[in-house]
Image (tube, rainbow, N blue to C red; front, side, top):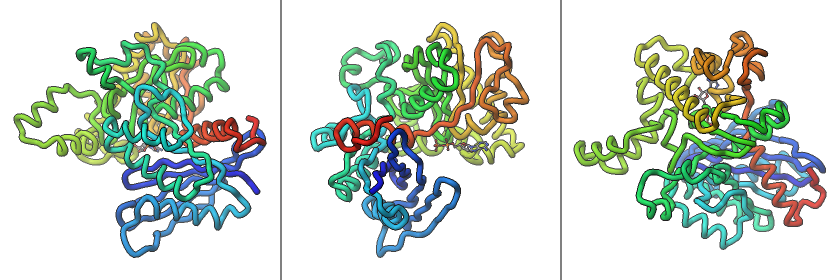
Length: 401
Ligand code: ADP
C-alpha cells in the first residue's frame, strides 16, 4: 500500500488538487487537476506527472457541489492509483487570522476557530472550509491539515501589520495580514538551495499571477508585504484594483448609490488589468494588443510594481536578491524588463538576453543585486507541511525528509 498526500484548494466554483506519493525521503508528484464549474455543470481535468492529460464532464442530475466535486477526485484516485491509501489531506485555507503562524492539524475545535475567521475573508474562507468538510466526510481516518496564505507574514513587526486606525481596530483584528504566504515560503526554500548566502540576506519576492503581491524578507522571514487586510490591496491584479484611496469606496456608496455588494464585485472582479484595459485579465492577450488602453493598463501595472520595489527596498535598507514568480513573473520577460529598466540605482543590472530566454539568473555578474526567476509550487508546499504534520502525529512513520 502506498501512502498518498492529497492537496485541495477549494474556491467558490473550483477545486484545484494535487496528489503525491510519500516516499521515505520525499514526495513524488503524481498528478495535478481541477474540478471547474462547481455550482453548475462541472468538468474534471487532470494532468499526470509526465504529461498525459484527461478532461471530462462530471455526470449527475443537478448542479455539482463541493462534495460531488471531491467525489470525482476520489473516483479518479481510486481508478488510477490502485493500491494507495490517502494518508493525509492538506487544505489551502486563505485566512489564519492573527494567531495561526503555521499550518495546523484540523480537528473539531480548530475547524470552529477557522469558521470564526470567515468575516475576515467572506468570499473565500467558506469555500475553503466546504472543501475541508467534504474531505473529512470522505476520509474520516485521514490526517487533515490547514495551510494558510496569511501564516508566513505573522513575523511582521507591528508597524507592517497595522493601519493608522485607533488601536481598538487593530485589537479587533483589522490588520495587514498579507497573502500568497505559501508561495513565498516555497520560493524562500528554493532560494536557500539556489543561492544560500543571498537567501539569508535581504530579499524581495514578486509573486505576479492573476493575484499579485510582493514581499520583503530578512533572513528568510517576511517583514513587509503589499497585500493588506484583504487580497485587494497592493499591486493591481488580473481583476482586482490593488491600492485604492478608501475615499473612493465611500464615494461610490454615498454619492453613486452603489451597494456594498456591487462595490465588492467591482473591486474583486472588474478592476485591475481587465478593468483598465477593457479587454482581458490575461497577460498573454494583453501583450499581443496594440490598443492604447491596454498599453496604459500594462504601464500602470509595471509602475506600481516599481513603486513597491522601491518601498520594500527601503523597508529592508537595501536588497541583495529579487525573485520573480507566478504566471507573469515566470513567463513574461517583457514585464520583468519593464520593471527592472533604469533600476541601476538599486544595484540592478539586467542581463537582457538571459531575461528573454527566461533563465534562472537574469542579472549580470556585475549586478550587486542578483535577480532570479523561480517557478513557485504552492501545492508542494502544502503537501510538505501536511506530510510533516502527519508524520509527527504518527501517521507516516516511514517518511523522514
Ligand atoms: P493564479 O494567480 O490564478 O495562480 P497564475 O500564477 O497562473 O495565476 O498566473 C496567471 C497569469 O500569468 C495570467 O495573466 C497569464 O496570462 C500569465 N501567463 C501565463 N503564461 C504566460 C506566458 N507564457 N507569457 C505571459 N504571461 C503568462
